Amino acid sequence: MNEHGEGIQADKPIPPWEQPGCFRRDCEPHRGNLLWWLAAAGLTLGGLALFPWCWPPGLIGIPFNLCIRYLAKTDLAKMQAGLMDPYGEGITASAKKISFDGLVCSVVGMVLWGGLYLLLFFRIMV
Image 1 (cartoon, one colour):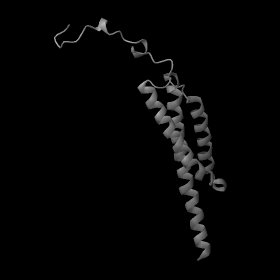
Image 2 (image 1 turned 120 degrees about the horizontal axis):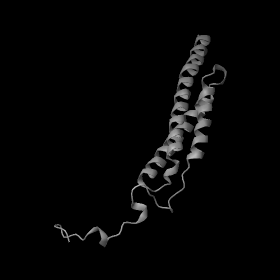
Image 3 (image 1 turned 120 degrees about the vertical axis):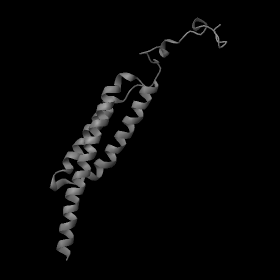
Image 4 (image 1 turned 90 degrees about the vertical axis):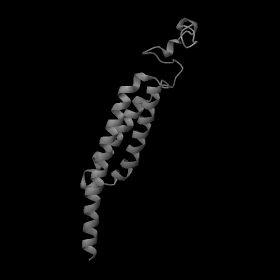
């Protein structure tokens, strides 16, 4: 016993999944590949929103990319807590970054072309 009345480390063996660099084998599988492909689709929607003749995909791209960012954020938190397979951490972080780029493109396209169309519409009406 040590000075705090606790037993030595050998009395309580550390499970293999709690050792540094290890994780439980029965944890959730990562969704990194799925999130990456969804983020690529969100970036495509955002990219389309930058063209003047097809800005409406930005309407879909904004909530789509926000959902992907939320899913990637929760998955990364689960990976840090050891509840999800950590081998998908890199691709999940990449999906989070790509969805941010898609979100920015969607917002810029909506503001730029949506504002221009509204301006032209009200100018014609006056």
